[in-house]
Image (cartoon, rainbow over all chains, first blue to last red):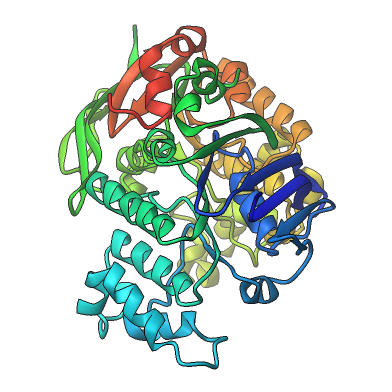
Length: 234
Length: 254
């Protein structure tokens, strides 16, 4: 039984259709990773799932409830958070203020969540009074994920969490993602680094030209020679 | 072979990140050479170093037999090495024609003295520049939009405007950073035709592109970059069969 189910999505920008009938799903306590060449529609898919774009056709279901076409602020209240690829922290706010902004819609006491985030990312506690914009790329990525976790989501959407990071940081971020999954959050992510991303994924999808071309267990996809060729236009 | 551009062991670091890490590539005169590679391979950084937008931390760059790696962007442009940007940088509040007329440097009308005391010279020069701009617009087929504000163009038209702006500078070599991104098919065809035509007139192209169809249509030789340096080169058919290239796209260790 999937916690997030995306069925036959058609979506794009204005008259330009980018996704031509894409279906993916994520089961509880699972990491599903989408890979694919530039321009294949990975980020468009994430934006459509999170309600930033409205699909022309298809359906998104979160925990058996249809959320297609809902606004992001509604979707967040239903337990799904999204971390965009870039510009995902408030640069002029402190780390603590950023995390508090993450809990903006909560009117209960969120100190437990804050403690959990600090326990998961000790570095954020050390830097809590530093401005978000002064953090390194990897630290900002951690802050962005921490911000999303302030709402205790059931599903987390991550758009290229390791892009542009130093090689050492890539491993660290992916390790954190595996830990977040272990804590019971289902994760759907787009990842540039196909090898490292698929290694820790239960399920993998390959997108090309707006269509799903392959789907399999993470490791099995890596062993499929046709997947690599897709990047070079075959 | 007549090497017009030689990049020798160039390095560019940002803090601990070695974006370009000892990269050596060459581009032959009057060729269309492709530069591909996974995201983060350092392609755009290399373009930025070649065109003087970044100062390299090591290595040498030679263009037409002159060393150019310590020159600023405007000096390199005057040496007839021009570039376009991945995200078009048109001057939004100016018309298409004005965008082009701005390109030639040292215009007489820039000096207030000339506008008062040599108005004839200012007018003559401006007329010449306007004629050249109109010629270029005819060539890229944007002439019908010459009085349109640049901000109102479509993405594809802005890409053609980028190319047109480089042509105003009479370049010998043009570096194109993802000319195909966001461009629809019919404009893409036009772009490909224009590039081939310009090459037959003697210009050299060095092209970053992720659209492999466009690479196939344009380039006789392709260089693959990964982790800040050259990984492979050859015809696109050769490149496609190279296991190391596929590995690099998947993010594996090379």
